[in-house]
Length: 123
Image (cartoon, rainbow, N blue to C red; front, side):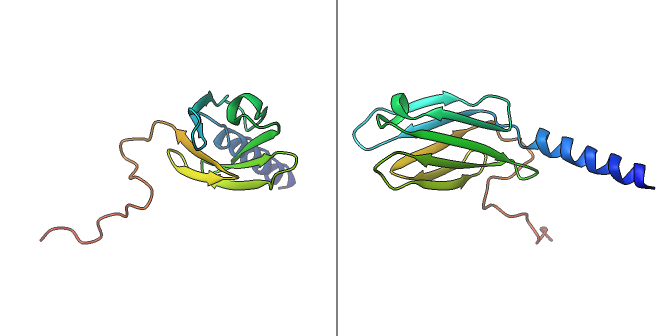
């Protein structure tokens, strides 16, 4: 019984890591500056410098959230207020003075975020 429980926990952990993998592109835009785009690697977290992306020295840390396909983003720049936020696949978010857009292919059978299912079939 204990072996089965351990195997289920290991399987859940592996599945969680797989579902947390990043993917697609991330576009960063600031006022009066050209947009920068980075390709997100297929790994569950990623850290990169912000120097070339937003023109401010600092770090950006991106982590995939298991089972929700969302990502959490932290931006830390010395001398400036830090910011963080959660971004859904294909969504947009304003974090620490930067407009972030996640470019990812959304499945055809998946409705866009905020669109519900039709609970009232036509008569």
